[in-house]
Length: 271
Ligand code: ADP
Ligand code: MG
Image (cartoon, rainbow, N blue to C red; front, side, top):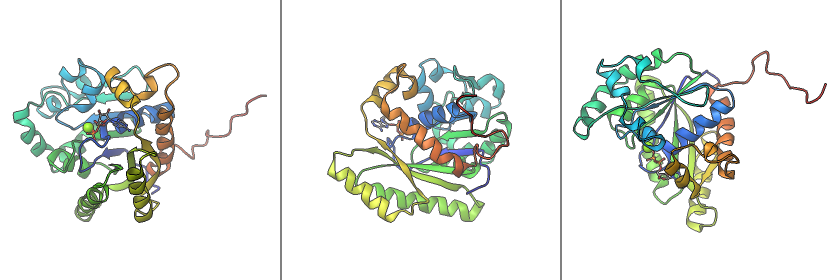
């Protein structure tokens, strides 16, 4: 994969596997490494906003832009981290969730959105679990997809279903590329978890299964309670936050980010 990708959906069949957590923390690491990122929340439950701030979860966003009630400039939220912006999903009431998914399903409106989101090197789309309208729309509109899979017994089965959907879309649309499968909530002390990891390492080709694995760690709950990515939890972030730097470094070449610019040369430490 050498082409330059501008959009990456984070998607999985199963809920609670860490999509939103990965989206936020990966974005944080990518930005710190020099990529300008916009996170777009296409989950009607507004997981991105919910995990960051109560105010954000009440604000307008993608939904209002879709309905022509707000221009993009009004709903895009800059963050304290230069190079990172968010587009919250906005207000989608439970009753309107289906209509929201239907509007997004063919991918065209999200393609228009992606074309309007200039000024970023990467747009990261956090999707709702499963393959409903909003997720299918994101997959149709985006260049590549990252698939988090939880290290648990049903992993292989949910992964097979996810590959089926991606292959179907690729046959019909020529995309998205599979940026990688990411093991999450890995418990290195738990034999069940390690057996599943070993099975996946054996059966999923190494160019698909990412080397980085996200461990299960209670500190994720602290970060989500505080409404911050791990890297901002405290001045000296916990070790697991570095996992996302590793993930960013592993994904950058797959996404065509960074690399061979003329000014990207070794920097000497002393004169
Ligand atoms: P999804 O977006 O796939 O539904 P989330 O990212 O919302 O999943 O994660 C579900 C829950 O699990 C959240 O409470 C989150 O804080 C927690 N969580 C996510 N990743 C981890 C991890 N590696 N270790 C422990 N808890 C995690
Ligand atoms: Mg989520």
